[in-house]
Length: 414
Image (cartoon, rainbow, N blue to C red; front, side, top):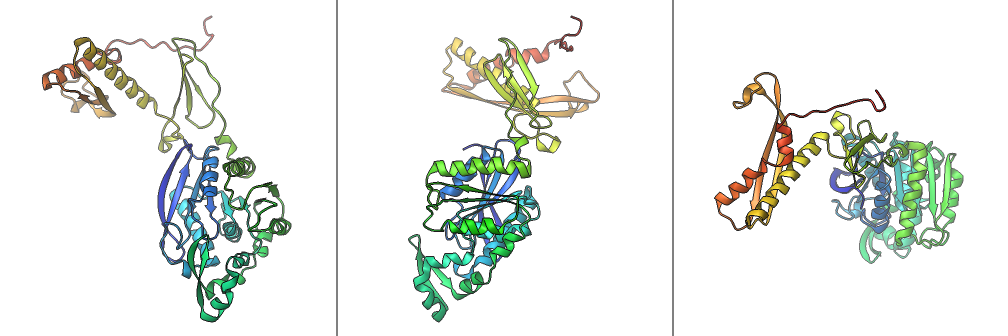
């Protein structure tokens, strides 16, 4: 999976701690999306995880979470309803806004799509809304437990089996879901809308997509999922949805500028070429001898996108690699049973007056701390010999010798 995934927890509408997962792309996200799962599903259903994976490959971060009482979230499902789902969605958007960035894209699958449509106006930063196999009326889910309606109405609640698991449905759930007019929310959306639906969806009929599309105002789009099933159980279907969302959303939330590829550069053998990528304020692409490609950047706190190591990180990497290689070659030459080594480096700026053995006495100096571990069946004397040779590595010696750096404008003086 591109990027990384973080487990998070936030407080839902009813006060329960809701389990969430934030899928992040490599580098700074081009935008954030909030994903709502289907009725009685969880954030880890295949459709949710695969769509999130697809969107992160396009530079879009995705927060998906378990509604109250579902998955790994706290709370009692029996005490929830459609209104609490909408409230959980708004709470998730608030969490994103407070800790990362407000979601610009809202995505909902099945009943989650209906919840997204109802919650959209309460997330002012959201500019694009996407539904996947969503019902035009949240009361549509009642068909899942239609044979228990009489018991629920008469006894106040009933245990029903959905997707092979028992759930307790209370009368308040029915009362709440029947009190929602989703068409009004859709008509007043004032956001770009993308409707996905399969014409062979046997869980939520295709006519629901027609109702949603007709009620919405432009800009609106419809994409047929051909022979996909309701849960998008085939990986290709979920990947297709993610790719279409990313391309469509870029028009409204400006994610495209974060997904552009780095410029193609190729350094000649024996040279290194560094060039700005245009993807971030400080992001640079590096070609090493035409054989290896790297990225350099700075942390977000200093204006970068954090898409790669900083120049000082690369410097420390060069020192550490050189020391490690030198120790290995020395041990092999001497026949020492060295099985491996680890070099840990840290760079800092310190006041010269704090350095007793430094020639410079004023201002600040660069301080590079190096800690070395050597592994193998050796005595301490042998270990120290191997560590001592590390300071004789070529890069270390270069930093301690006189160095000329000649910078010139290309073509100048020719």
